[in-house]
Length: 125
Length: 364
Image (cartoon, rainbow over all chains, first blue to last red; front, side):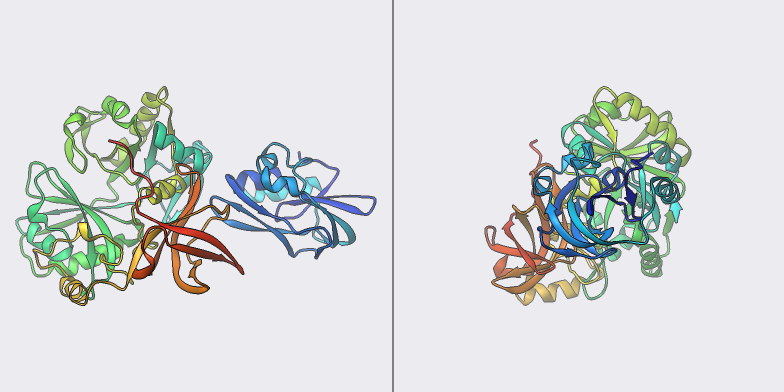
C-alpha cells in the first residue's frame, strides 16, 4: 500500500496538502516504469500551475514524459536539488523526491485516495 | 500481435513487452543501461524470434540473389555471411539483410527485419518469376533465433554445441548440433561485441535459453531487451531500418557502400550509378555527440547557424561513452567531424558536435 496521507492522479503524480500548501511528486510506480532517468525540468517558484496540465518534464532513456499538476495554484518552492540527483526518485519518491510545493487554489477533481490508486495500478498491469 | 516461442520465458522474467515490427518483444527486463553495460563487460542474451528467416535454395539461388540484393552472392565463400540491402528501381532501401552462404550445399539463408518480412517475401516472389530452379522458404515460424553477445559469449556458448566456435571467424557460420539437435551458429550480432546468433528448431528455444542462462550465471550473463540492443547498435554505428535507413534513403546516403557490389546486376544499381556519376549524394549520415543531458530523439530538428539542416534518425543515452549520442542526415558540407550542430527540443537548442561513426569500436 502506498502512503495514505496523500492523493494520487492516474498519471502517477501524488499530492499532499498541509496548511494550504500541496507538496507534489511522482509515485514509485512511475519511477520504476520510466526507469533509467536522465533529466528533470521543474518550473521555478512563482510559476502558476493548473490542475490536469503539465508543469514539467521528466526524461528517461526511453522517452520524455510530461508531469501533470494535481492542483491549481502558484509554485512557492521547487526542488532544485532533485534535478541533479535523480537517483533520489528511486530511493525516496515520497519524501526527499518531492518536486514542487504549490499554494493551492483548487485541487483536481480526479485525485484518488491510495486505495483507489492501487486499484488503478492493477488495471494498468 | 505475434509472439515468439520464448514469450512465457520473458513474462516469467518480468520483462516489459512492447510491440515491434508486429511482434510482442521484451524492451527491458531490468534497466536498459544495465543490460547494455552487461553486454559490453560480460554477456547478454537476446530473443530475436521476430527477425525474418528465409532459406533460398535451388540451382538458380545465386542468380536470384544477384538480382534481389546489393552484395554479390557469387563472391561469398561457403560458410560466410555478407551485409546487403534490397533496393527498389530508384535505389531506395526496402530492407537491410544478412546473406548467409550455406557451408556445405549451394543454398543461402537470408535474415531480414521483422517489420519488413512480408514485404521482402513479396519482393522475393516477384523477382523469383524469372528463375526456374528456385525455392524460397519462410522459416521464421519453425526456427527460433537467439543471440548471445559480449566478451564472455563464446565461453558460454561452447557449452551448448558441438560446433567448433573457435573455427568460426567474424561473419562466418556453421551447422552442427545445438543442444543435441541440428542447428546453426554465426559469429554475428547487432551490438558491436563478439558473439553468436543461433538458429534452432522452435521446440528447442526454451531449453536452449535456460541452458545458456545456467551456463552463463557465473560469467554474469543477463537477458537483454530491445532497449539495450538499440543503444548498443547505435554505439556501434549500425543502422536500424526505420531510423537511419528507409524507403527514402540510398546506401550511398547512409555510408553503406561496403554492402553494395557494382559487379552484378541488382535492382536499383542503375539509380545508384546515376547518383555516383552526379558526384555523390548531397547529404551524409553523421554521428553527433552532445554534452547535454537531453537525449536527442528520432524526428528532432538538427540545426546549424539557426537554420534547420536535418533531422535526428536515432538517439540515445550511451552508457559506454557516458554521453548522449545520435545519428542524423546533414548536408555534405556539415558532415566533417568537429562541426558544431544543435538539436531542437521544443523551443530550446541543445549543442552537439559531429563525430566519426562508429561511436564505439571494440578492441580486438
